[in-house]
Image (cartoon, rainbow, N blue to C red; front, side, top):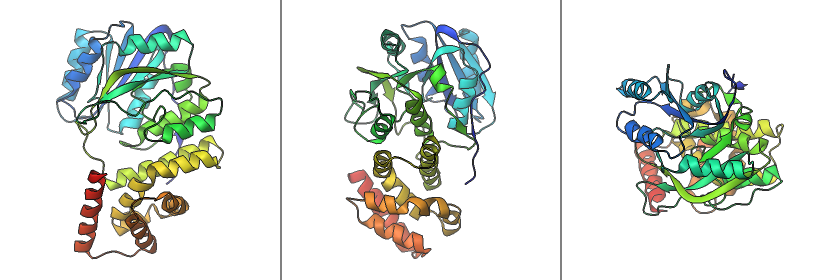
Length: 338
């Protein structure tokens, strides 16, 4: 998979004290008003919201144009569909703020999100800050953000971002980031709708010297809401892209602690989804996946069946279709039961 990583081309000078909120949007006429209303409800008023309509075919474009007419702080941009990652790049390139915030189009801010995040990042002059957040559609309302102490060792910080249930996590949506840091992020030229967050956050963490935590639920993340479940193809591409990004940051040799955390984080969805691909599709990823299958297998500690999946996929052996469907359903059942 040949990719070019490009730096954003910033179009405007920085406006001190301004927060630019980037909202990539695709076919979300159901939830987008709730998202935009949560921005309007912010107690911190010095913001702009760059609404990037990523080629929507429903009424999304009309809705964001209406908001842009009602409040000039909303800036509507309409572009062809290229995926969430490149929509964020477009938003960043058109930003003016000293600080950058991201919000997913089906999520919502607490009314004091910007106020409290801005207070923290300016209080200690951090490169970025993150907060606790609430997950909609889940019994446990507190997400996995904890008060991780930022380390002087960049490898330790990136490894912690990869560890589920610990640290800052690798989402972009629960963070406020200095634009001077975010502008250093290089974006791969690929249509990506899953895995777009770690591609950015790995680079943000790499370039940051300081970060801080706001221990309050200030963001509502609606996992399982408007966004459809990703397909196996997207999951495999995301895993490959995460690894490529880490290799670029560390000149081809990922540090051991980051590599261990990476394999522990992605082993399940990568091995399972790689196996679920049709043989012809799987062949185009063979070189990339083969390079880290041993690490994925070594990270497998609970569901040994995945090793069988990887073994047969690696040999190019196809299961009979009925057995294959049964296996997929079985693994899906195990996922839901964990």
